[in-house]
Each structure stands twice: as C-alpha cells, then as structure tokens.
Amino acid sequence: MLKAVIFDLDGTLINSFYDWDLIRDKIGVSNLPILTYMNNLKGPFKLKAFKVLESFEFKATTKARLRKGIKEILETISKANLKKAIVTNNTRKNVLYLLKKWKLSFDVIVTRDDGVWKPSAKPLELAVRRMHLKKNEVIFVGDSNPDLLASKKAGIEFISFSQNSGVSDLKSYIEKLC
Image: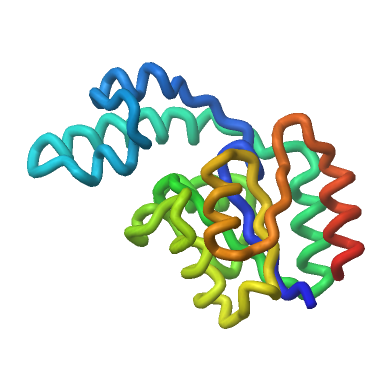
C-alpha cells in the first residue's frame, strides 16, 4: 500500500536551467559526475569547487519556476494522507528557499548536505527511514538517469516525470495508487 511519494526537485517539481557544460568547465571536471569529482578533491580545491557550483545553483534557484500543476499533485497527495519527501542533489539552502517562495511543505527533505547523493540508493533509503516506512510503501518521481539509477539500486518504484510528461497523467496515477 502506498504511504509516501518522494520527488526529485530540479526538472521534476521545478523548471530550472543549469549550463552544465559551463559549470563542468569552471570546476575542471570532464568525464566524472560533478559531485563525485568534487568530493575527491582536497582542501582549498574542494572548497573552491563547491563555491563555484553553489553560485551557479543559487542563480538557477532564484530563477526557477514551479512546474504547472505541481501544487494540485501535492494537494492530491495530502488529501490521500500520504507523506511527501524531496530527494535532491541540490543544497538544503536552495530547497528551503523554494519551499518558502511557493509555500510548500514536505515531511522529509534529503539533500547532498546529508552526505549522500544520487545515483546512489542512499538518499532514497535515508528518506524512507526518516519517514519510518518500507521501500515498497513509497514511489519515487524523477526526471533524470541518476534518479532512475538511484531508484533501481534502492528497489523503489520509479515514475519518470520529464518536461514532456503530463501533470494530469501523474496526478491520475497517484490517485489510482491511493
């Protein structure tokens, strides 16, 4: 039985723009995932890389737009007495900024500040533990390959919700599961 819906943030709940090629160039990473590369850096190199990434992320956050229909989906979930969570590779600061901006609330928020990030299963597993649920009681809604990989590794049902996905389709799917 479904008891919670976990959402990715960027590209799923919100539309935001990141120039990943420019960010990778500024940080100096080529063929590794950005967070993996940065977490292997030491001392001032690591601090500088995170400052660069966080600067780009905050600019994208301030310009982000809530996807049309998301509030209705979140209301449907709340009316069904399901828990809501966010699992994102973004920072807690940016998530809280956006939640305050759009007056949204979630039961659990897991960010890279928790020391875990996708495509690892660990952020999803942490969200499930914090909600005191089992993996088969949640679904994960995301838009990217790291989201899909994290979901598969965690053994949690994944719903792809890209820019081309219909909000009404997701809302109907969640209503059927309730």
